[in-house]
Each structure stands twice: as structure tokens, then as C-alpha cells.
Image (tube, rainbow, N blue to C red; front, side, top):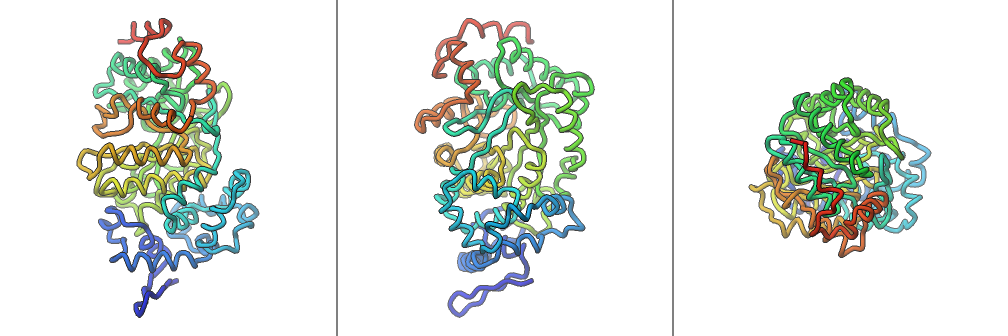
Length: 456
């Protein structure tokens, strides 16, 4: 079905819903690269006007990727809850935006989640200003648990990311200690391994768990290996807390990652069988990023932001502890500069939180993007105001293994400080017991000094 809107004497026609969604997106380099972006700012405004007049129900009735061709589409449609959708079922996308801005009760927003599809939240985000994305996301409450409680109001968690270019255990342990002394690690102590080998993953899992257990740290650890490697680790009896996997918004992009919905369900069941969580059973950790489907040739003519929202439709089916948009990581081919990264980060956070996900954002950029740390400071601050669940803590904000720029332990302390945010409550109590107190750093608590001994 075609959609149209006239501006002056010019009538703009959009051949189908996928084309309308793409043209309504604020400009970004990935959509231009794919030939999906609006040809002009005027055409984009026409598409946004047509989008505002579109009934929300149309986004359910007309899948952007056919039901028969894509298991992500089938997941989204099969899990849709008409009763939860009923309060907004008669609204247009524009009226839904107004409804979201006016609704002040987080419980009402939470009750709506099963009735929303990723395409609905993507559509409404395209006609929102930055302040709209911040205001609505700040009202969304999503709480998850494993060994601590993540996402409570007034809290900001940090993923401690102690990557090392050769997976050297002593180097990873040193970075872990650095982060703990600066109050990071309550979201997860998570290592991106340089090698996805079973042996290396087993070594790192054992080392991280030894540190956690020796000092009774109320957090979770994760080696971000491929899901199949995690399954082999579980079979080998490794101390695995969370199963990690990168995911996307189409069956084809997930196939390029070497995963399927069936495989993810198998991995979740395997992790649950270990019973390692002390206060909760949220065992999955997902990462996503705008542009991944295009880079895999798996976008089906759908814009990258809509596909990102569809990835959140995959994530919420598995009750994750953490979801992370690595918003600027893929590069300027998909998000060209700081302005595009800023917009995409707030879109991702808004869409994920509205769908009920514990959204973190890796506030990051690659060195060949037209962006700098000032751009990241702006995005970090806006995300804090928007109630982001967690951010990254990377030594010096410079990941020496993945070769990109992120946020440091001190950046997280800045955000907690200016907004009056605190770590997860169980982790905050642990910091106090260890003498780290306000996590200002500067002194080595005696109980942590041995953490580097015998780990090489």
C-alpha cells in the first residue's frame, strides 16, 4: 500500500510502509549508503507528516518483512498482545507521541509493552525531537536481577570492560581492579575476548569468577564469546553467569552472526540450569547496533533504525539482564558524525526502554568518524537524564583491544555525581564494606590488593 503527503504543490508518494519508515528517519549515512534515505529534507518532512497520520494498527497489519520469510517477524507478530495494545489501538502515530508525552505513570507504560511492536516504537521515535526521546524514556522503569538489582530509579550501573589485546589474565585483572576502585562493575564485569577459543574463554571465566567469589562482589561476570562457545563452556562445567550474543532485527542478519531464535533459547535454558543467580534469573546479555543488517546484506530494504528496534523485539523474548546498543561502534559508514551518533543513541535507548528492555548504551565512536569526546559527553549526559540503565567503563575511555573510543570509569563517576545517581544497591553496600565508599578512588583497599596475585 502506498502512502503520500503533499507539501505545497508537490505530492510525495512512498511506495510501501518500509519506504515511508526509511524516508521519515532523520538523515544518517547508513540509510544513504543503502539508497533508502529521503532525497531531500522536504521529502523527509513529508514522510514524517504521513507517518504522524498513520494508524498505529497499520504497523501491525503490514509487516515490513513478510511473516513467511522471516522468523523475527513471526516472533513479533505471534507475541503481540491485543489486550495490552487496546488503550492505544485507535491512535495514529502522531497521537501516540502526544499520549506518551502526557502519560506520567510508569506502571501504565509498563502495562503497554506487550502490545507494542518494534515498528510502532520506531515509527513514533522518527517524529520525536531529542527532548521527546529523553522525556519518555525517563518515565520507563525496567528492573532486572541476577546477583544485584539493576535499573532502579536513581541508580546508574556501569559495565566494567577490562579488555586486553592478547587476553592476558594479569592485564585484565589489573583493569578490573582499576574499575572496582572507581565504582564500576555493578552491571557486569565483561570481557570482549581477543580469541573466541574454548580454552581462552574457560581461562577468563575462571579468573573473573575467582575475583568475584574471593571478595564476595555482588555482581556478575561475562566473557563475550559467541553463544556456541558459551554452550561449550557450560558443558565443560565453567562458572558462567551470563550468555552473551550480538543480535539483529532480521533472520538473515542473525544467521550471519551464526545464531537463530532456537539457538538463543537453548543457550538461555542451559544458563538457567546452572542456577548461579542469587537474587534473580535474568541470564542473557545482548548487544546490538544500527547498521549491522546493512553490513551483512540482510536489511531487506528496511532502514537501520527500524531494524535496530526489531532487534529489541528479539531481545525481549529472552528476558535479558542487559541490552547494550554499541551506537557508534560500527563506524561512519552508518553513523557519520557526532550529530548522527547522538540522535541514534537516544533513539535506541528510547525504543528499548519503551519495549521493556534494560537498556545500556556504549557511548562510543571510531577514530575515523567525524566525532570527538565532546560529542560523547553530550550524549552521555542526555542519556543520564533519560534514565539509561548502564554505560561502559573502559580504562582511559580507549579500548586497546577493540580500538575505539568509549567512556571511562571517571565518565561514569561524573554522570553519577552531576545527576545524583548511585550504583546498584547491593554493589553500593559492597563498596562501603571494602572501604571504597563514594568510589572516588585514590587508595587501594587492603582486601583487594591480592587480586593480582596468582592470576597470570
